Length: 225
Image 1 (cartoon, one colour):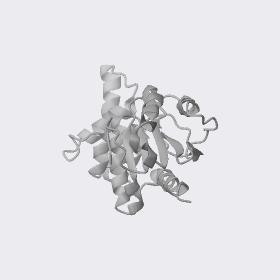
Image 2: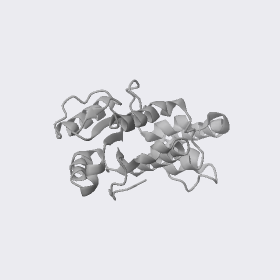
Image 3: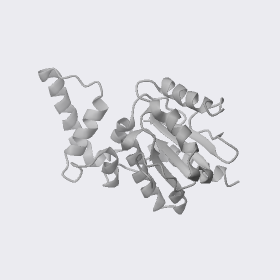
Image 4: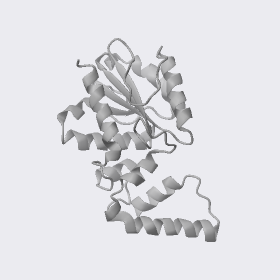
């Protein structure tokens, strides 16, 4: 599947991801899904950059010669500090394309006569969570708990020591914790956030990814009816 800012369209179902880590995570998740069902081979993950770039990148994307083959678009971005603001940002982008009714994540809307669109927000990746946060929060929940719980407890203790005894502050503690978890194992130490999933650190069968999987399936089915 495609990755990075090279936006050569290769598949009819496109997932536009915020940043390299999200793109990488989705690529490896698609690889996992494709081993179970060939339909997921029809999806391609592309990096649209930062959220401030989404509107311009989507405009450029729609002008590409290969865009005529695109039948569905799924936007995935971090909610960060405000789930509501993230929703509103995506709604604002969609209004630039004449779509004024974008509201609930996971709902499929008409982008054009031949293309549908939807969106999901990390870390919840569902239509209920309204949870602030980012990819790293989701990854922490996907780490195989029984296998890694002792390391997770020690990482928490270590961060507490640095906070209480050294005076360090961790405004993005989910990122600190995840990277410490990843670097605690020789198997994962040189892996980026998405790559750790490819190497088996995350449970891609987790129910927390069920809504993402079902949304992908619905998007693929939506233009074949």
